[in-house]
Every structure is written in structure tokens, then in C-alpha cells.
Image 1 (cartoon, helix red, strand yellow):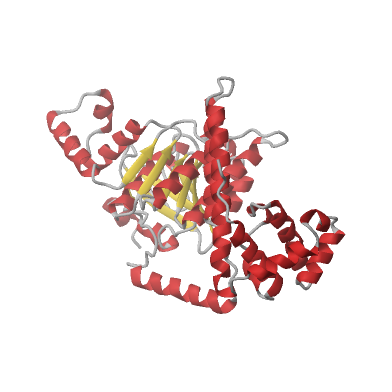
Image 2 (image 1 turned 180 degrees about the horizontal axis):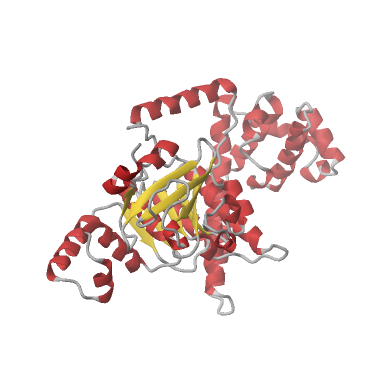
Length: 453
């Protein structure tokens, strides 16, 4: 099989770099030596790239001298070969297009090589299919990253134009100060402006505090506002998420729903809620033990089809880790969190990452969490743009929240412990006993009268 190649265009690119002083600056960020198909072209480009990085003048004579110093000039065919490249220059106007063609041919060769390897592994009974699947996701990840390579170097004039353009977009789309995806909580929207594109938001809590319930509320609010939402549920089956969504939409009693003791009218309400939710743009992947590579690959595919504008991952510590040699658990978790952040930046969407807190908060009298309680926290805290710590004072045996004075029954606190681009603080929310319905916290009239000044 003839590999994808474009020898004459490779020659044209190298020729332009030899005779035009600005050519190397345009080509260098886009091409690497391994992208050239012809081995001789690889050697010539490698020499020119090294000279460009060192700030040395590039022309036929200096490149020949560099190749001679490397002991490669005679193997190429001597100075004649280098000189012959300059005869194929097609003009600087076509240089970027020619570089793109060289890049594209390289990607096609990379795809052929990678897919052939996957085919061989798939046919080998001695290999673990899960490992092969992991290789497949990594290959797709590499190709996607390579295909999406672009030059991000901007001068201040361009950066200021881009910054002002984003500010104008925020002014146009901002509704009640919400420039991102609405959270469903008035105070949280005020603090964050909604979930912002490119941000990694970590929602952390101890077990049974309500991470998943809180995330489902965020998902439902985002989807009802028209945002394509994707949930990767590692901990819980999709049907259990469906239960909670139906209960939140219908108001059916959670205990009777779980025990199969629903009344006739509740079944009608649940069916109506399910019908309404069927049209909501939420997708759920409950594949179970999946890796962050799998999540990234799936999100990219959906995003390319316009079906992913918010990702929720439940939850980080359950995602499949690689267990590489000389890397401890904290480093593995940090690597997974970093991939989630890079996914947010690459797709320019918010990514909400659920995470466990360690047991330190349980040793405090009020069991109120702090940022240091993030389990395997170093990398998570570093990569997160926003960190929310969930707290329910009732679970700590308190009748009253010490900071707000609110009664603890039905009270939740989302502590904005980190906010890279804004303020921190407490967001108080109300919830029903089953944690299926949430909203802004409103104290009872009795409490307000009692505490009125």
C-alpha cells in the first residue's frame, strides 16, 4: 500500500525556507521533522529547525554547512540536493497551504499505522481487550490533538481585540448578570456569573452528603436552559439517575417510589415527568469503570456534533487510573484532574468534576469542610477554577448552622472555597428530605420573624 505523501510539496516547503527569510517563522510552529515523508527532507528540515531556534541565518550555504557538521550532507547527495530544493519554490503566498498539506499527509500516515496496530492487537487472543480499547482511545486522542494543532501566539494588538470581543459577547448574552451556563442558584450565579467556558469546576463532599444530587440539579438547570449536557456516571447506574430526575420533576414521594408503593396518581405524574424529561438535552454514559481518556474521547466526539456544551463527571476517584510505575495515587488523581481541565480548555466548555473529601472534616466539631480536605488534593485544587465544598449541618448533628444562624433542617451549603476569577463565599440552598429537589434557601416566616431586628 502506498503511504499518503506529497513529495513535491515537501520540496516546495523546504525550498521556500531556504530562499525566503520569513518562511521558517511561518512554518516552524506548524511542522516537525517527523511530518516529512522523505527521509532526506526530514534531515534537511531538522537542520533548518535547529538553526532557526538558535537564531542563525538560513540559506543554501549555511544549511549545507550545518548538514556537513552533522555528517549527513554526503548521505543526502551533497550540496546539489540542497540546491535543487530551492528550484521548487512556488511562492510565499502558498506556503501555509503547502505546510497544511504536509501536515495532513502525516496525520493520514499516523492513522494508518495506528489503526493497523489496533487491528493486530484486536486479533491477538493474548492481549486484554480493555488494554486495546485504552490504546484506541489514546490513538484517537493523539490524532485529535494533532489535527487540532493551531498557532496560539498572539501579539497584544490581537489579544486586546479578542478580549474586547469576548467582553462584548458577554454583554450581549448576559441575563441578570449570568454570562455562562445557569446553575439554578441565584447566589451562585451572582458569584460565578454561571459556569464559564474553559473552566474546571470541582464539587467535593463526604459520602452521602449529596454530590450526585447536587450535580443532577446543575445538569437539569443547564439542560432546561438549552445547553447540551453530558453526564459520565461512574458510580451510579443511569436508571438511578433517571429515578432522581423523575422525582425532581414530578414531586412524587421518594420513599414510595423506591419501595414500589406508588399511588395511581403518582404514576401518572411520573409518566408525565418522564415525557417532559425525554425532550431535555441530557445524555448519560454509565459505562462504569472508565478512564479520563475515554471521557475525553467521548466528549470530543459529541462536541464535534454540537451535542456537548457541559460535561459532568461523577466522580474523579472512581475513574480508571493507569497505575504507572513510580507514580503514586495522588499523582494519578492529579493527572486525571489535569486531563479534565485540558478538556475544558480544548472544547471551551465548563467541566464539572465531582470529588471525594477526606475524613479530616469529620474530626471538627461542626464537621465543616475546608479546601485542604480535598482527597488527594494537590492537583485537583491546582487545576480547578472553582471549588465547591458541600456541607449539610444537619448531618453533623447541628440544629442550627453556626455561620448563618439558619435552622439546619433542609439546609445545604455550597462553600465556594476557590474561585480563580472572582469572589468566594457561602451559597445556601434548600432541599427536600430525599435530596431530589433543590433551590434557593428561603428561611421560614417563623424564623424571619424571630430574627427580625
